[in-house]
Image 1 (cartoon, rainbow, N blue to C red):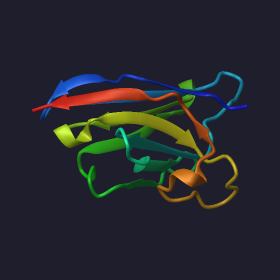
Image 2 (image 1 turned 90 degrees about the horizontal axis):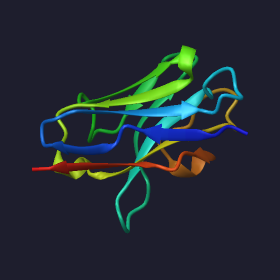
Image 3 (image 1 turned 30 degrees about the vertical axis):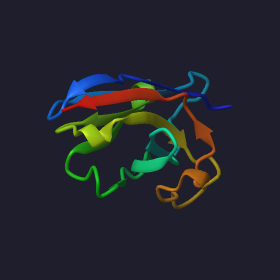
Image 4 (image 1 turned 180 degrees about the vertical axis):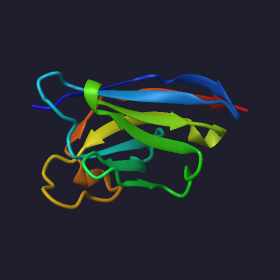
Length: 128
């Protein structure tokens, strides 16, 4: 059973930066192939932010974070990252790391229902 744990959230000023980390459980040798970051604000559904195919390096970003956020991985430590720069107040949300374990070939898009393993979330708050 893969377990994911996020860290690195916190508070930042608009224009600032934060880096989120997501560590996969130590009982697996590699990150799951299809990984993504989502975010959620109170009363709203989970919004896809960025996704990564850990085997091909393919990345995809939501338009709202394109050119500001970067998703990446460190295979040696089984860690997924989300580098966030030029933060905006509208980036304030709970951020979740997710894996889609049931996809053998192409990874799914940024649709929350396609991802079946989630971390507990880390809060990001951006003030103006």
